[in-house]
Length: 276
Image (cartoon, rainbow, N blue to C red; front, top):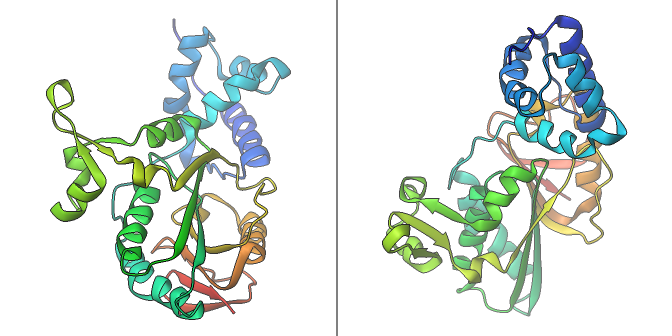
């Protein structure tokens, strides 16, 4: 079936809708991306125009398709130990600091990975933390991992990756935290249950109220804020600050920062901030 070209007016309708409901800014230079990402959805549903598709998506009957649309439009680029210095900071600074604050007694550690994608980032956080906690006993660790895309969350929950995705993981950590596939699963690695059990994967839209009621020791929000305008960024940072414990840390992408955003966080080093 032939599909009509995406007109400027149709693109504006879609981009305005995505911004209103998901906070994602789609500028004019993203028109071709939107066209290519949604083309398959139009083919599957039998629509010949993007306007007809939009009318359906924005209707009451289009509730399920809205999930498919945001799955298609979400950009998910991730890998284990991406921007590695954050994980070194977690191991060498944050965990010992928290342990010292609690004077060696039992304590809880609560974190949030706000853009879980296909799972590499939250699993890296968990692996580094669990490995470090063997030297810091008495810690109850839990990690919330969320994303706006249900498609990538399904992949993350399975926790199965090909060997190439694990290139940056040391042989020792690979053996310790992954199960090697055999037979038909040869070349695949599955995250072990001891890692999976500390992570809770959930859908979450950052522009909506956070259904999180417990304070957190750290938040990873990396390479996400670039998709929002300044007003939305400010609202999200305000919520993050309220959620963090005193002394808690916010990790952002290496190309991101809080310039132009009002906040009470202390700058620690590039892309890392602390609540005083």
